[in-house]
Length: 417
Image (tube, rainbow, N blue to C red):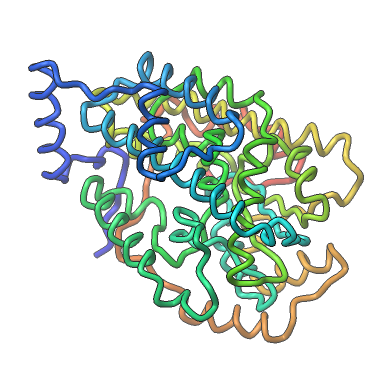
Protein backbone atom coordinates (compact mmCIF):
# COMPACT_ATOMS: atom_id res chain seq x y z
CA UNK A 1 0.00 0.00 0.00
CA UNK A 2 1.26 3.49 -0.86
CA UNK A 3 1.84 5.54 2.28
CA UNK A 4 0.84 9.17 2.63
CA UNK A 5 3.87 11.29 3.55
CA UNK A 6 3.72 14.76 5.13
CA UNK A 7 6.29 17.20 6.45
CA UNK A 8 5.51 15.94 9.97
CA UNK A 9 7.31 12.71 9.04
CA UNK A 10 10.56 14.58 8.37
CA UNK A 11 13.43 13.10 10.33
CA UNK A 12 11.11 11.31 12.78
CA UNK A 13 11.72 7.87 11.30
CA UNK A 14 15.45 8.34 10.83
CA UNK A 15 17.49 6.91 13.72
CA UNK A 16 20.60 8.09 11.88
CA UNK A 17 19.49 11.72 11.92
CA UNK A 18 18.44 11.50 15.59
CA UNK A 19 21.83 10.04 16.44
CA UNK A 20 23.78 12.68 14.51
CA UNK A 21 21.83 15.51 16.08
CA UNK A 22 22.30 13.96 19.51
CA UNK A 23 26.06 13.82 19.01
CA UNK A 24 25.94 17.40 17.78
CA UNK A 25 24.13 18.59 20.90
CA UNK A 26 26.74 16.92 23.11
CA UNK A 27 29.51 18.52 21.06
CA UNK A 28 28.00 21.99 21.51
CA UNK A 29 27.70 21.47 25.24
CA UNK A 30 31.49 21.01 25.44
CA UNK A 31 32.11 23.98 23.17
CA UNK A 32 32.62 22.21 19.83
CA UNK A 33 30.77 24.27 17.26
CA UNK A 34 31.68 24.12 13.55
CA UNK A 35 32.71 27.51 12.20
CA UNK A 36 30.70 29.27 9.53
CA UNK A 37 33.20 31.80 8.28
CA UNK A 38 33.62 33.07 4.72
CA UNK A 39 37.43 33.17 4.80
CA UNK A 40 37.60 29.67 6.25
CA UNK A 41 35.20 28.27 3.62
CA UNK A 42 37.14 29.89 0.77
CA UNK A 43 40.43 28.54 2.17
CA UNK A 44 38.94 25.04 2.44
CA UNK A 45 37.71 25.23 -1.16
CA UNK A 46 41.09 26.36 -2.47
CA UNK A 47 42.85 23.57 -0.57
CA UNK A 48 40.44 20.89 -1.83
CA UNK A 49 40.51 22.13 -5.43
CA UNK A 50 44.27 22.63 -5.47
CA UNK A 51 43.83 26.02 -7.09
CA UNK A 52 42.70 29.54 -6.22
CA UNK A 53 41.16 30.16 -9.65
CA UNK A 54 37.78 31.42 -8.43
CA UNK A 55 37.55 33.98 -11.21
CA UNK A 56 35.83 37.15 -10.05
CA UNK A 57 34.81 37.74 -6.45
CA UNK A 58 31.10 37.74 -7.36
CA UNK A 59 30.52 34.79 -5.01
CA UNK A 60 31.80 36.73 -1.99
CA UNK A 61 28.81 38.95 -1.20
CA UNK A 62 26.23 36.15 -1.42
CA UNK A 63 28.51 33.89 0.64
CA UNK A 64 28.79 36.47 3.42
CA UNK A 65 25.09 37.32 3.35
CA UNK A 66 24.10 33.66 3.43
CA UNK A 67 26.40 32.93 6.37
CA UNK A 68 25.06 35.94 8.29
CA UNK A 69 21.53 34.74 7.66
CA UNK A 70 22.39 31.21 8.76
CA UNK A 71 23.87 32.51 12.00
CA UNK A 72 21.03 34.93 12.76
CA UNK A 73 17.94 33.09 11.50
CA UNK A 74 18.41 29.41 10.66
CA UNK A 75 18.72 27.81 14.13
CA UNK A 76 21.12 25.26 12.68
CA UNK A 77 22.00 22.11 14.55
CA UNK A 78 25.66 21.19 14.90
CA UNK A 79 25.10 18.60 12.18
CA UNK A 80 23.46 21.27 10.02
CA UNK A 81 26.42 23.60 10.44
CA UNK A 82 28.77 20.84 9.33
CA UNK A 83 26.69 19.90 6.30
CA UNK A 84 26.05 23.45 5.10
CA UNK A 85 29.69 24.42 5.58
CA UNK A 86 30.54 21.40 3.44
CA UNK A 87 27.92 22.34 0.85
CA UNK A 88 29.23 25.90 0.49
CA UNK A 89 32.80 24.61 0.26
CA UNK A 90 31.78 22.07 -2.37
CA UNK A 91 30.11 24.71 -4.53
CA UNK A 92 33.25 26.83 -4.55
CA UNK A 93 35.39 23.75 -5.29
CA UNK A 94 33.21 23.05 -8.34
CA UNK A 95 33.44 26.70 -9.38
CA UNK A 96 37.24 26.55 -9.18
CA UNK A 97 37.45 23.29 -11.11
CA UNK A 98 35.13 24.61 -13.79
CA UNK A 99 37.27 27.74 -14.11
CA UNK A 100 40.48 25.73 -14.33
CA UNK A 101 39.04 23.31 -16.87
CA UNK A 102 37.67 26.06 -19.12
CA UNK A 103 40.96 27.96 -19.02
CA UNK A 104 42.72 24.76 -20.13
CA UNK A 105 40.10 24.14 -22.83
CA UNK A 106 39.48 27.51 -24.49
CA UNK A 107 37.47 25.80 -27.22
CA UNK A 108 34.61 25.49 -24.72
CA UNK A 109 33.97 29.24 -24.90
CA UNK A 110 33.19 28.83 -28.61
CA UNK A 111 30.34 26.40 -27.90
CA UNK A 112 27.03 28.00 -28.85
CA UNK A 113 24.05 27.36 -26.60
CA UNK A 114 21.36 27.64 -29.26
CA UNK A 115 17.62 27.95 -28.71
CA UNK A 116 17.40 26.21 -25.35
CA UNK A 117 14.01 25.19 -24.03
CA UNK A 118 13.52 27.06 -20.74
CA UNK A 119 10.65 26.02 -18.47
CA UNK A 120 9.62 28.86 -16.19
CA UNK A 121 6.73 27.49 -14.14
CA UNK A 122 6.41 27.16 -10.39
CA UNK A 123 7.16 23.78 -8.77
CA UNK A 124 4.40 21.17 -9.00
CA UNK A 125 3.02 22.63 -12.25
CA UNK A 126 4.22 19.84 -14.54
CA UNK A 127 7.73 21.18 -15.03
CA UNK A 128 9.42 17.84 -14.31
CA UNK A 129 7.17 15.93 -16.68
CA UNK A 130 7.62 18.56 -19.37
CA UNK A 131 11.40 18.50 -19.04
CA UNK A 132 11.37 14.71 -19.40
CA UNK A 133 9.17 14.83 -22.51
CA UNK A 134 11.21 17.60 -24.13
CA UNK A 135 14.37 15.67 -23.30
CA UNK A 136 13.09 12.73 -25.34
CA UNK A 137 13.62 14.82 -28.47
CA UNK A 138 16.75 13.38 -30.15
CA UNK A 139 17.89 16.96 -30.77
CA UNK A 140 17.71 18.08 -27.12
CA UNK A 141 18.67 16.95 -23.67
CA UNK A 142 18.34 18.08 -20.05
CA UNK A 143 21.06 18.52 -17.46
CA UNK A 144 21.40 15.23 -15.56
CA UNK A 145 21.46 15.31 -11.79
CA UNK A 146 24.88 13.69 -11.54
CA UNK A 147 26.60 15.98 -14.02
CA UNK A 148 25.02 19.08 -12.48
CA UNK A 149 27.09 18.37 -9.37
CA UNK A 150 30.36 17.61 -11.17
CA UNK A 151 30.27 19.17 -14.64
CA UNK A 152 34.01 18.87 -15.26
CA UNK A 153 35.68 17.07 -16.69
CA UNK A 154 32.65 16.65 -18.96
CA UNK A 155 31.63 13.11 -19.75
CA UNK A 156 32.22 12.04 -23.34
CA UNK A 157 29.82 10.14 -25.56
CA UNK A 158 32.03 7.07 -25.27
CA UNK A 159 32.33 7.10 -21.49
CA UNK A 160 29.17 8.73 -20.18
CA UNK A 161 27.25 5.56 -19.35
CA UNK A 162 30.13 4.17 -17.26
CA UNK A 163 31.19 7.38 -15.55
CA UNK A 164 31.93 6.60 -11.87
CA UNK A 165 30.37 9.91 -10.84
CA UNK A 166 26.94 8.39 -11.58
CA UNK A 167 27.37 5.79 -8.84
CA UNK A 168 28.78 8.42 -6.50
CA UNK A 169 25.71 10.61 -7.03
CA UNK A 170 23.43 7.68 -6.26
CA UNK A 171 25.29 7.10 -2.99
CA UNK A 172 24.73 10.73 -2.04
CA UNK A 173 21.01 10.43 -2.75
CA UNK A 174 20.86 7.26 -0.65
CA UNK A 175 22.48 9.11 2.25
CA UNK A 176 19.94 11.93 1.94
CA UNK A 177 17.08 9.43 1.99
CA UNK A 178 18.50 7.71 5.05
CA UNK A 179 18.67 11.04 6.86
CA UNK A 180 15.22 12.18 5.79
CA UNK A 181 13.11 9.30 4.40
CA UNK A 182 9.97 11.36 3.60
CA UNK A 183 11.90 13.45 1.07
CA UNK A 184 11.97 10.47 -1.29
CA UNK A 185 8.20 10.71 -1.80
CA UNK A 186 8.26 14.50 -2.15
CA UNK A 187 10.87 15.07 -4.82
CA UNK A 188 12.32 12.72 -7.46
CA UNK A 189 16.04 12.10 -7.16
CA UNK A 190 18.30 9.96 -9.30
CA UNK A 191 21.64 10.41 -10.99
CA UNK A 192 20.18 10.13 -14.51
CA UNK A 193 17.04 12.20 -13.91
CA UNK A 194 16.66 15.71 -15.30
CA UNK A 195 17.99 18.42 -13.00
CA UNK A 196 17.00 22.05 -12.60
CA UNK A 197 19.39 24.92 -13.31
CA UNK A 198 19.88 25.46 -9.56
CA UNK A 199 23.30 23.72 -9.25
CA UNK A 200 24.83 25.93 -11.95
CA UNK A 201 23.41 29.14 -10.45
CA UNK A 202 24.67 27.83 -7.09
CA UNK A 203 28.24 28.17 -8.37
CA UNK A 204 27.81 31.90 -7.78
CA UNK A 205 25.77 31.30 -4.59
CA UNK A 206 22.81 33.22 -6.06
CA UNK A 207 19.86 30.87 -6.17
CA UNK A 208 16.65 29.80 -4.48
CA UNK A 209 18.34 26.45 -3.95
CA UNK A 210 20.25 27.83 -0.97
CA UNK A 211 16.95 28.74 0.68
CA UNK A 212 15.70 25.17 0.53
CA UNK A 213 18.46 24.11 2.93
CA UNK A 214 17.73 26.52 5.76
CA UNK A 215 15.40 29.34 6.73
CA UNK A 216 17.37 32.43 5.66
CA UNK A 217 14.84 35.25 5.04
CA UNK A 218 17.37 38.09 4.99
CA UNK A 219 19.44 36.32 2.32
CA UNK A 220 16.19 35.67 0.41
CA UNK A 221 15.26 39.36 0.40
CA UNK A 222 18.70 40.27 -0.91
CA UNK A 223 18.54 37.58 -3.60
CA UNK A 224 15.31 38.92 -5.06
CA UNK A 225 16.93 42.14 -6.22
CA UNK A 226 20.58 41.21 -6.70
CA UNK A 227 22.32 41.31 -10.07
CA UNK A 228 22.14 37.76 -11.49
CA UNK A 229 24.55 38.25 -14.41
CA UNK A 230 27.50 36.59 -12.68
CA UNK A 231 25.32 33.57 -11.82
CA UNK A 232 24.27 33.19 -15.45
CA UNK A 233 27.90 33.45 -16.50
CA UNK A 234 28.62 30.36 -14.41
CA UNK A 235 25.46 28.70 -15.74
CA UNK A 236 26.47 29.21 -19.36
CA UNK A 237 30.08 28.20 -18.74
CA UNK A 238 28.91 24.89 -17.27
CA UNK A 239 26.60 24.18 -20.22
CA UNK A 240 29.41 24.96 -22.66
CA UNK A 241 31.73 22.58 -20.83
CA UNK A 242 29.18 19.75 -20.89
CA UNK A 243 28.46 20.38 -24.55
CA UNK A 244 32.10 19.86 -25.53
CA UNK A 245 31.91 16.27 -24.27
CA UNK A 246 28.42 15.43 -25.52
CA UNK A 247 27.30 17.74 -28.31
CA UNK A 248 23.61 18.57 -28.44
CA UNK A 249 21.49 20.78 -30.64
CA UNK A 250 19.54 22.18 -27.70
CA UNK A 251 19.22 22.05 -23.91
CA UNK A 252 16.15 21.60 -21.72
CA UNK A 253 16.44 23.95 -18.75
CA UNK A 254 14.14 24.78 -15.86
CA UNK A 255 13.77 26.60 -12.56
CA UNK A 256 11.22 29.17 -11.31
CA UNK A 257 14.25 31.29 -10.44
CA UNK A 258 14.30 32.31 -14.12
CA UNK A 259 10.89 34.01 -13.78
CA UNK A 260 12.19 36.91 -11.76
CA UNK A 261 15.22 37.67 -13.90
CA UNK A 262 13.93 37.12 -17.43
CA UNK A 263 15.90 40.03 -18.86
CA UNK A 264 19.15 38.52 -17.57
CA UNK A 265 18.19 35.05 -18.79
CA UNK A 266 17.54 36.42 -22.27
CA UNK A 267 20.75 38.44 -22.22
CA UNK A 268 22.65 35.14 -22.07
CA UNK A 269 20.22 33.06 -24.14
CA UNK A 270 18.49 35.54 -26.46
CA UNK A 271 16.91 32.86 -28.66
CA UNK A 272 15.57 30.76 -25.77
CA UNK A 273 12.20 29.08 -26.29
CA UNK A 274 10.31 29.94 -23.12
CA UNK A 275 7.51 27.83 -21.62
CA UNK A 276 5.45 29.02 -18.64
CA UNK A 277 3.50 26.22 -16.98
CA UNK A 278 0.40 27.02 -14.92
CA UNK A 279 -1.56 25.20 -12.22
CA UNK A 280 -3.76 26.22 -9.29
CA UNK A 281 -1.16 27.93 -7.05
CA UNK A 282 -3.06 27.17 -3.83
CA UNK A 283 -2.00 23.50 -3.64
CA UNK A 284 1.36 24.47 -5.14
CA UNK A 285 1.97 26.84 -2.19
CA UNK A 286 1.04 24.16 0.36
CA UNK A 287 3.18 21.53 -1.38
CA UNK A 288 6.24 23.78 -1.64
CA UNK A 289 5.85 24.82 2.01
CA UNK A 290 5.71 21.16 3.02
CA UNK A 291 8.74 20.23 0.91
CA UNK A 292 10.89 23.05 2.28
CA UNK A 293 9.86 22.45 5.88
CA UNK A 294 10.92 18.84 5.38
CA UNK A 295 14.26 19.77 3.83
CA UNK A 296 15.10 22.40 6.43
CA UNK A 297 14.16 20.11 9.31
CA UNK A 298 17.21 17.98 8.48
CA UNK A 299 19.58 20.74 9.57
CA UNK A 300 17.77 22.77 12.22
CA UNK A 301 17.13 22.46 15.93
CA UNK A 302 13.77 24.25 15.65
CA UNK A 303 11.39 24.15 12.72
CA UNK A 304 8.67 26.78 12.20
CA UNK A 305 6.30 25.56 9.45
CA UNK A 306 4.19 28.73 9.50
CA UNK A 307 7.22 30.95 9.02
CA UNK A 308 8.45 28.71 6.20
CA UNK A 309 4.99 28.81 4.59
CA UNK A 310 4.79 32.60 4.74
CA UNK A 311 8.26 33.00 3.26
CA UNK A 312 7.71 30.56 0.41
CA UNK A 313 4.33 32.08 -0.42
CA UNK A 314 6.20 35.37 -0.72
CA UNK A 315 8.86 33.84 -2.97
CA UNK A 316 6.32 32.20 -5.27
CA UNK A 317 4.29 35.41 -5.47
CA UNK A 318 7.41 37.42 -6.21
CA UNK A 319 8.35 35.11 -9.08
CA UNK A 320 4.86 35.18 -10.60
CA UNK A 321 4.49 38.95 -10.16
CA UNK A 322 7.85 39.50 -11.88
CA UNK A 323 6.76 37.19 -14.68
CA UNK A 324 3.45 39.00 -15.12
CA UNK A 325 5.21 42.38 -15.11
CA UNK A 326 7.49 41.14 -17.88
CA UNK A 327 4.45 39.82 -19.73
CA UNK A 328 2.93 43.32 -19.60
CA UNK A 329 5.83 44.90 -21.46
CA UNK A 330 7.02 42.04 -23.69
CA UNK A 331 5.97 41.39 -27.25
CA UNK A 332 3.00 39.04 -27.64
CA UNK A 333 4.10 35.43 -27.96
CA UNK A 334 7.31 35.88 -25.97
CA UNK A 335 6.55 32.54 -24.34
CA UNK A 336 4.07 29.70 -24.68
CA UNK A 337 1.66 29.18 -21.78
CA UNK A 338 0.88 25.56 -20.90
CA UNK A 339 -1.70 24.45 -18.35
CA UNK A 340 -1.03 21.43 -16.15
CA UNK A 341 -4.42 19.94 -17.07
CA UNK A 342 -3.59 20.19 -20.76
CA UNK A 343 -0.21 18.50 -20.32
CA UNK A 344 -1.64 15.66 -18.24
CA UNK A 345 -4.66 15.08 -20.48
CA UNK A 346 -2.78 14.70 -23.76
CA UNK A 347 1.00 15.14 -23.55
CA UNK A 348 1.60 14.70 -27.27
CA UNK A 349 -1.03 17.28 -28.22
CA UNK A 350 0.52 19.66 -25.68
CA UNK A 351 3.95 19.01 -27.17
CA UNK A 352 2.67 19.74 -30.68
CA UNK A 353 1.20 23.04 -29.50
CA UNK A 354 4.44 23.99 -27.74
CA UNK A 355 6.53 23.32 -30.85
CA UNK A 356 3.94 24.98 -33.04
CA UNK A 357 4.21 28.19 -31.03
CA UNK A 358 7.81 28.39 -32.29
CA UNK A 359 6.88 27.41 -35.86
CA UNK A 360 8.22 23.90 -35.40
CA UNK A 361 6.83 20.41 -34.98
CA UNK A 362 8.05 17.44 -32.92
CA UNK A 363 9.57 14.73 -35.07
CA UNK A 364 7.82 11.41 -35.44
CA UNK A 365 10.70 9.78 -33.55
CA UNK A 366 10.19 12.24 -30.70
CA UNK A 367 6.48 11.43 -30.55
CA UNK A 368 7.19 7.69 -30.61
CA UNK A 369 9.60 8.13 -27.71
CA UNK A 370 6.95 10.00 -25.75
CA UNK A 371 4.44 7.23 -26.46
CA UNK A 372 6.94 4.61 -25.31
CA UNK A 373 7.78 6.54 -22.15
CA UNK A 374 4.11 7.03 -21.29
CA UNK A 375 3.50 3.29 -21.65
CA UNK A 376 6.23 2.58 -19.14
CA UNK A 377 5.83 5.71 -17.04
CA UNK A 378 7.52 4.98 -13.70
CA UNK A 379 5.10 4.55 -10.82
CA UNK A 380 6.57 5.59 -7.48
CA UNK A 381 6.37 3.17 -4.59
CA UNK A 382 7.92 5.66 -2.20
CA UNK A 383 4.65 7.10 -0.89
CA UNK A 384 2.31 9.92 -1.79
CA UNK A 385 3.13 13.46 -0.74
CA UNK A 386 0.10 14.97 1.02
CA UNK A 387 -0.13 18.41 2.61
CA UNK A 388 -2.60 20.59 4.48
CA UNK A 389 -2.27 24.37 4.11
CA UNK A 390 -3.44 24.82 7.71
CA UNK A 391 -0.10 23.43 8.87
CA UNK A 392 1.55 26.45 7.26
CA UNK A 393 -0.94 29.09 8.38
CA UNK A 394 -3.26 29.12 5.34
CA UNK A 395 -6.60 27.86 4.17
CA UNK A 396 -7.29 27.06 0.53
CA UNK A 397 -9.92 29.83 0.50
CA UNK A 398 -7.34 32.37 1.66
CA UNK A 399 -4.81 31.16 -0.88
CA UNK A 400 -7.42 31.33 -3.64
CA UNK A 401 -8.00 35.00 -2.86
CA UNK A 402 -4.28 35.78 -2.64
CA UNK A 403 -3.68 34.13 -6.01
CA UNK A 404 -6.90 35.31 -7.70
CA UNK A 405 -5.26 37.92 -10.04
CA UNK A 406 -2.85 35.31 -11.35
CA UNK A 407 -5.51 32.61 -11.79
CA UNK A 408 -7.88 34.96 -13.58
CA UNK A 409 -5.20 36.38 -15.85
CA UNK A 410 -4.25 32.96 -17.20
CA UNK A 411 -7.62 31.23 -16.71
CA UNK A 412 -6.22 28.69 -14.25
CA UNK A 413 -8.70 26.17 -12.91
CA UNK A 414 -9.03 26.11 -9.15
CA UNK A 415 -8.36 22.61 -7.79
CA UNK A 416 -8.89 22.94 -4.03
CA UNK A 417 -11.21 24.67 -1.56
